Image (cartoon, rainbow, N blue to C red; front, side):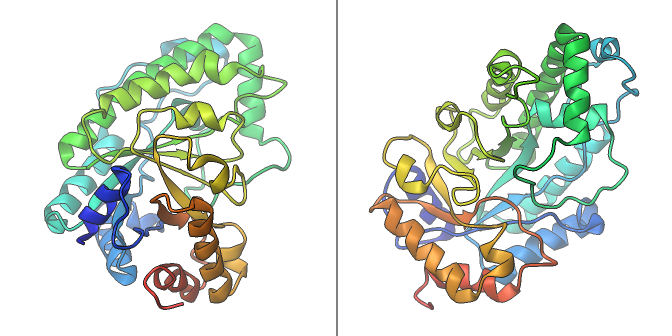
Length: 329
């Protein structure tokens, strides 16, 4: 099979000649936009001979006025999706599409409205993007959002609606630029807390998720990434996407708990936070074999649960993830 045929087979619920495999990480600053981003993506794809390409997006959301009070959130505009920060990502997608010439399917990152709002409320001074933190103390950004919810819940909802509409416009442009789908990253454990209200995601965020996915509904390779430790995994598994990716080992649920009862194809298997940085190649290969065993004959995609830290992960462990399904381990 070709790489595209292999992925399409899994999406169709059919067994390919072997499971597709891919993984991704956040490139350094010079790999975020322009030719540097194109070279970083193509180099990564070629180095590990991956079956599809997840196009990273660290170009950010267009700058917004400082948020001093919750009332400021009421003034966030709906963007057209081609503002400078968006345009940098669109240029990367266009160039990669041209240079790949149909070699692999691509899916490009679109963060959820809540994730974007976190960055709007507290803009980053450090653009370094590491793998997600699971558990631990409340992040100051999340504490600030809780304060804003308590100050003016309706204003936060208005901001999320404006951001979701903007992201929907951006998603449309990503597909027009040549991406085969979007990779929508969502996270509800930031949202549904005792302080915010345990149904806040359903109240304020989920409709916006649907708006973004509707904008990309004609694409063939839409993926959903459930980041963190999902409060309601099944609600995300009902989203209209072809593939769902999550940290099955670090965050759960386990593959064998969901693969036979959800519609999207499963993309998971290897622990990005523990096994990849700290295990041996044999440990990585064992997780691949275990993931396929859990799948119980259902077709699936092998990947890590989320991004990995390239400064900590030995390339031999990434090679082991690939070779384990190609008969090399």
